[in-house]
View 1 (cartoon, rainbow, N blue to C red):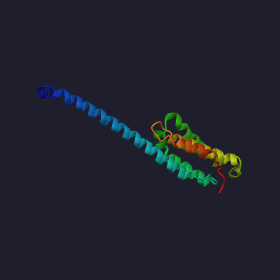
View 2 (cartoon, one colour):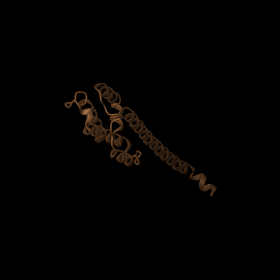
View 3 (tube, one colour):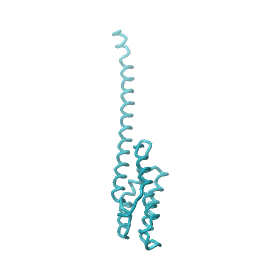
View 4 (tube, one colour):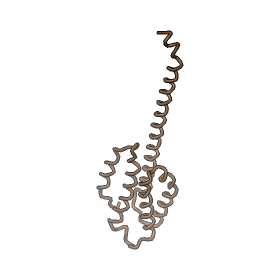
Length: 151
C-alpha cells in the first residue's frame, strides 16, 4: 500500500489541488454574490430613507432627483438590464412633479399612489435578485396594499 501511495503521490496531489481550487472558486463566487446582495439591500435602504415621504414642494423634487443622479451608477450596475427602466420611471415621475400640470396634485390620492407604486417596484427589483433576498418580495407586496395617507 505504501509503495502504491509513493508511486501515485504526484497524481493524488494534482487531484487534491484541483479539488481545492474548485472549492476556492465556489467560495469566491458565493462571497461575490453575497456582496452584491448586500449592496443592493443597502441601496434599497437608502432609497427608502430618501423617498419615504411624498414630494410636496419643488425643492423636495430637486433633492430626490439629485440623490437619484448621485446614485445612478449604483442603480445601473446593481439592477439587471430589464429592471433599469424602473429607475428611469421613478426619475421621470419625480421630474414631472417639479412643474405639475395640476397645481393641487399633493391633495390627490392618485399622485401619491403612483409615487409609492414606482418606489415599491424599484425596491422590489433591488430585493428580488435571483441571488438576493427573495422573502422580501412578499413583504413589499403587502406594503403596496397599505394606504399611504398624508401625515
